[in-house]
Amino acid sequence: MKTSFGMILAVLSTLSPLGVSAQTPSTTPAPTQTTAPDAVKIADFEKRFAQGKQLEQDGKLTEARAVFDGILAEDPNAKGSLREAGIVSVGLNDLPKANDYFEKLKTLVPDYPAAIESLIQINQALGRDVKVEVLLKEFRDLHSSGKLPEFTKSRSFVRERMPSDQNSVIVISEFFDYKLEPYTMWMAKKYDADGHLVRWLLLNYDPDATKALRAKDPKYANTEIFTWYEHVLKDEKVKEVDVYLQIFALPDYKKFRSAMLTILANPPKPIYSQTVDASAQPQ
Image (cartoon, rainbow, N blue to C red; front, side):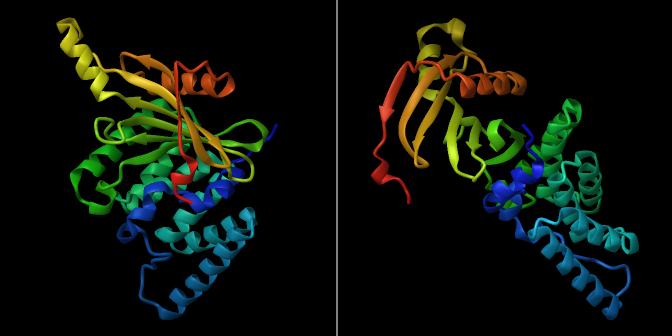
């Protein structure tokens, strides 16, 4: 089985492939930025950039990257070309090179959330755990700083996109604060090769159960209860909520990820199920 990151981007193109960037238009870098206000050169860059974008949209990723690289050879600080070359490199599954483009973009625009989020996903895929933790701290600090109001309103971001079986993809979102509604720490959505949502798992904080347990016995004063559950889908609508397991401490990401993959492969018997009125859900 061969699944490329190009398929992942194609599947998720309508879902905002750079995550929170869609919520922060004021921080999106311009397509090109030349070092001198040469109108002819700017017009040439804009024309070539548009050609690169068209090639990218047509799925001709190698050719598209060559166009963006040509612009960058003349203007290494062309932010839009760095961004698109990074996206294209992810599509080509050339993650080390994608990392280089986004690192340069992040250097030029330190407070650009989409660049940091992309770097988190890339380094997660490359298994660079220490680098991911550094980026996560920077990302969360930017979120809590209030510098970018629209970004600060964001409740979650995409931490990882991973290829799965039969050309499917799993998208894992991490929430900034699991003690705020919807009380979610991590959410995993699995999409098939056509981009249809087929599985939807969550690890949620349970404030009521936590409060009740702490009131019951002082030795549980620092205990937090989390619940594994799944939105069971039919035709991409939630038809049932299955509760699988309660745990008494927040696991680290690796443990969450391992448990999530186990549940996806072999769903456990629910300890509780609740049907959902599909007709009441958004169309």
